[in-house]
Image (cartoon, rainbow, N blue to C red; front, side):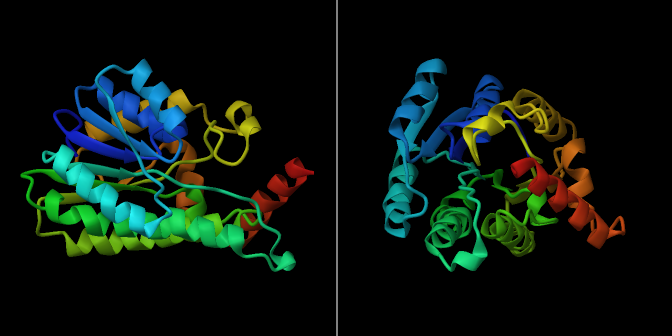
Length: 254
């Protein structure tokens, strides 16, 4: 993926990894459009980064995606990169039998990227160089049991990305997957942004941008911190690692 001279749409761009990626790509010389549900956060990001653009989108709403895509295609006909970053993460006690949170997570984390890709792919395919980047998680490869639906949607996004990449192999559209570790954002709860167990956001972005710059043909963007999760199955001892990982998280949550 080329990292300069693009017109880039980033969902979930008002905060966390999305905003930090947007600022990094903006600083590198790209036209960046951030999208998200919370207009106040989009406005704050735009105010801090003159020249960046914004558009409100609830990616969990299928009808909203269709009208949003038409707006984006009209306003930014040079759009050639889409980064599917928007996501929600919630803890779930499965014995409770509640499914409202699970449904919202699936709509946002899985159906959202699928729907938006379908809506924008005809435009992307007309560009000489284009890219779709999904954002999965290390939890796609080793789930955190306290966030079962989140982990499942990220595993599904990994699988979907592989299929999309294969189907687009003979087009101008490159398909990448960004696989974050546990990062200092407020994805799960506000305290995560200061959790010493999480990777500092600025370090994650710096390493990610360096991989994109030095490995333009990479299909998976894995910082060093996420590799134990990404390759847990391949490295052997998966069951023991799964138990140790989740036991440690459960102990910290008490």
